[in-house]
Structure formats: structure tokens, C-alpha cells
Amino acid sequence: MASTSDFKNGLIFERKNHLWKIVEFQHVKPGKGPAFVRTKIKNIRTGQVLEETFRSGEKIEVVRIEARDFNYLYNDGTNYIFMDNETYEQTELSKAQVFDVLGFLIENTPTTIAFNGEEPIEVRIPQHMSMKIAQTDPGEKGNTAQGGTKPATLETGVTIQVPLFVQEGEIVRVDTRDKRYIERVKS
Image (cartoon, rainbow, N blue to C red; front, side, top):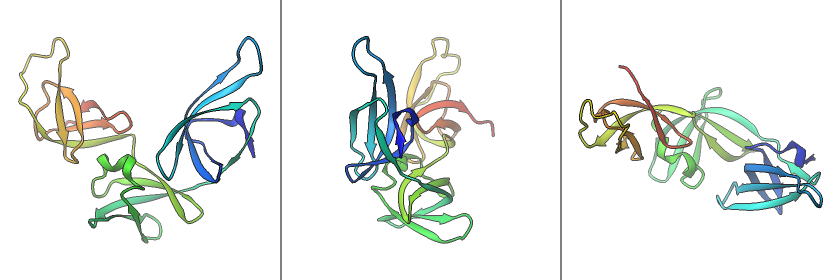
């Protein structure tokens, strides 16, 4: 058991027979009345996001998860296949289970899969990844004084905003959580 003082982003707990993950939270101490915690929580299975308010000190049932390192291998059309880095066993996950990271899954991507017992509940990818620009409009050299951007499609199909000087075929570092350009990667 844990209380609201143990809240942190990414904490997974059980409530009303469902697993929930804390997306963000804020402790609030109003001038009148007791303190409370305002949270945004996400249902692990359905992806539904709710705003919940917990009384300060309220008890919650924290779920102990085990995280193991995997390598993403391929998509067989319906399932996504991952290989355990220690045992070399393969695990199949459905599209719904990898939906949050789908736009950044490339073959041989190192991933971490969190398990509740034997049930996979979350797939985590690196926060920064290097990806190839598959399609973008031609840019103009020297036209970056005002920091203009243009849309670019990555090799996985995700579209992000990049500076005007970035060209098709270049490798860029991308923040996978915010889906934004960080820098060009020197080859």
C-alpha cells in the first residue's frame, strides 16, 4: 500500500479492478479545507485518460512491475515481435499494446517491456532516437535567420517539424515523447 505522498509520474497502481498510470499530478493545499492531489491518470489497457482527485493521505494499491530489456524484431502483419535480450525468447504483442510507441518502432530498436506477472502492460522506447528523413520539401540554404520550420516525414511515417536546412535522406535525432526534432546527426 502507498499513499498520495508517494505519487510520481509513471507510477502504476490498481483502482476499480483496472491498472492506471499517473501521467501528471499536482499537490494542492487550498486556503480552506484539507489538501488534495489532482492527477491525470491513464488506463493501461484502454488508453483512456481521466482526471482524478485524491484526498491527501489516501491509500492506493501500487502494482509491482518487472521491466525486462527486449529488441523489436518485426511486424508479421497482426502482431509485433520482440526478443528478450537475456533468454532470446520471442514475445508477440498486439497493435493495441504498442500503440503509444508505434510511430518509432524500427527493426532492432532496443525496448523495455514492463510486465505485471506474465502480462505485458507497457512498452518503453529510448527517449531520443536517430531516424532518417523519408520525405520533406527542399529547403533553402541561409534562410534560417528566423528559425523557420517545415514538415518532414520520418522513415516510420511520423511527421515532425524540422528546420528549413534539413534535407531528404539525412539522419536526425528525435525526441520520441514530444515527437520533435532535436538535431542533425553527423554521418
